[in-house]
Length: 94
Image (spheres, rainbow, N blue to C red):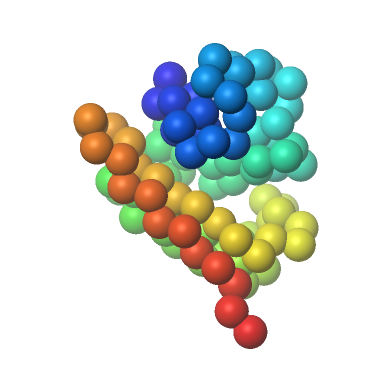
């Protein structure tokens, strides 16, 4: 539920459309908004969001192997496990 709230709250889709976006593959690694490429908090990234920071950097460097998102120039990580959300936007520099 937190992920759907984040996707909607950040404006990636309209309010109430987050579940449809996920169901239709929009959050898959090849979808419009590749999400939790390392597995998210339920798989590989718990550590209170720090692993998500590392994954964002790996993706931007092109070092994510089989989970690499092609042509990535901007990434976002956001930890939302309480009533606070802490988003960080990363941009690829040259």
